Length: 349
Ligand code: NDP
Ligand code: GDR
Image (cartoon, rainbow, N blue to C red):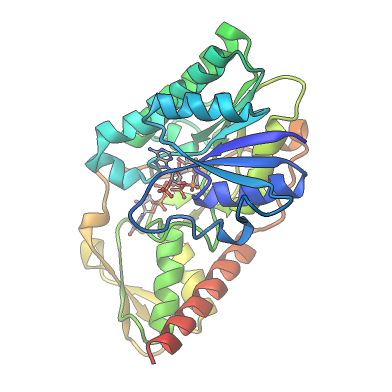
């Protein structure tokens, strides 16, 4: 039985990847952080008490900022594959905690690579690289050969992680890959990323639990796919003959504004826009009720205006074949958040 170790197993991608690997027959190990409240909500459904028979997922306390914990887990587990998904993953927040973001997102990667080297394991390594590396638009669509232009402490940290992964591949002949993944979303997406923030708020507005939604830049464009499809690409990268780097994207781009329009339309609250700049409002076109306002605190010191990926290499070399398109993704997220809001409403009497 193959063994995989996942950092960031409690996050959106970690939970989908753990499901996929268990389904493929792996023994899955995950590194979790000690937290004052439960942080395993996304993986509770696949977790079993290790005292039970036939357990396939095991959790270990550790931290990407603590090399000794990483070394110990590697020595104990001796994984065939490591997926480094752990990160301070919020771009806006990285401007507030730039040094910490660098510790986790940049140095965390080299701590794992060094742990692999020191333990002399023949472990394959996947690094969660990001379309944020492209930052300021140099060319579109963005592909593996497009130059990087990071625009945030998060992206700068991820640039270090990208290059150190490549460097360990070239220096030590390690099987180390970068997946340059464009934005991918799901009902398990963190509540402060823009897609989930919109679907969650729309469900709560529809059920009367919330009055309106405050957003930042409505005109940023992103290439949004489904997280469940994207974790398959991660796994495929580590099953190839040779390690390499791949863009994973849909090849379509939509603005935050367009995403919000689709979401509210599905809930029978068609949006119209009034005003300009920070005064702009999204209103219910039928009733005139204000649903969306701008709060400049969500603007970023430097913005990434347009991401649009070219997944040709992943499709042709990996045979990667995403199943969920943009409309299906929006509908999946809206329906899940409406159900959550209805449940919250019932719970509140
Ligand atoms: P999430 O924010 O949902 O999950 C991040 C995970 O990292 C959580 O499990 C979190 O643990 C863990 N983590 C945070 N800090 C540390 C630390 N110091 N030590 C160990 N673990 C830590 O991110 P996603 O699942 O969306 O993304 C997965 C990875 O892919 C990240 O590296 C992200 O930067 C990258 N990425 C994501 C994209 C996307 O669109 N989702 C696109 C491109 C790249 P806890 O639950 O305790 O907070
Ligand atoms: P991003 O995702 O920065 O692309 O990083 P996010 O959803 O946070 O922002 C996307 C775009 O929406 C604009 N925006 C807002 N964003 C947030 N979070 N909240 C708002 O209220 C809001 N209003 C407008 C942003 O300015 C931005 O342009 C995600 C993360 O998952 C990273 O870890 C990953 O590497 C990249 O995707 C690819």
